[in-house]
Length: 157
Image (cartoon, rainbow, N blue to C red; front, side):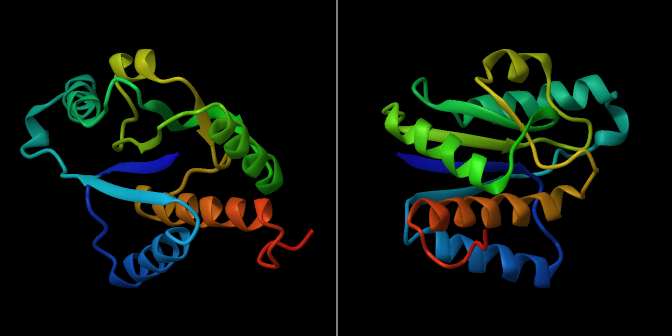
């Protein structure tokens, strides 16, 4: 199985980007992983929230292959402990999925079209985090999940 993380807009904090890169590199020892950035929309001042979500949704959906399993990082999604998340990933891998795609939406969330296409939603917390920090949290939790599955000492139980 491959895992892909799609995110709207690039990270402009160099220190945060270094941490993201560090976990992406660590994660590559366990699975084929790709972090793809969808550029921020231009001229959003002229767009309503709904129009912005629709345009971002179109960009997200263009990146998906028909066989991809789409999971949204959404505040109303299912919350997991790190161990439960590792079990969730193991079940997904066992099911024969070719590519599992996690998506971090734009500032207003996802379009209805994206919600319709999604096959699951995951919430990292009831708290709100910046979209840039969420990238780090997701790649760290993916890395943690694989260390848990391999009984490696990164995660303390």
